[in-house]
Length: 176
Image (cartoon, rainbow, N blue to C red; front, side, top):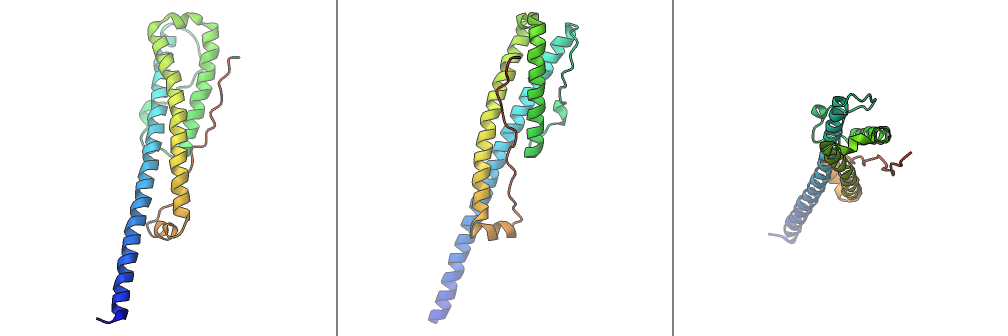
């Protein structure tokens, strides 16, 4: 075997190893980002479920309200970050209306089931905030990695694109 043949074989092995390593890293970072997105989905579902339980109690008591509750049956894992942001915003709007309703009807807080669901509803918002930070961190790392060389070449070959960030800005819900 000539020296040129040895160099060619060595280059093929090096390129193959780089290809496998970079492809594996891209896939693992994408999976991590998707897992964090699934956590956001489950947090949104939990908040919606708790809200629906509280609205059921409010209706049983005959209290009029205009709080919109998204249908939990329409949720699924793998929603886009844009849809997740929209749902988080809808839930915060409902949260504000619920707080206003609680000021008008403080007797609801005496209902134990309502109080438990309210606590879990508020806890789920805090968890959702933490999930969104973790998702955005993983997704930013993924987007940065696939924009650099040689990952950008392999990402293009594997049809991998930038993933959108979770865009809803959590603000403090103030008591009016």
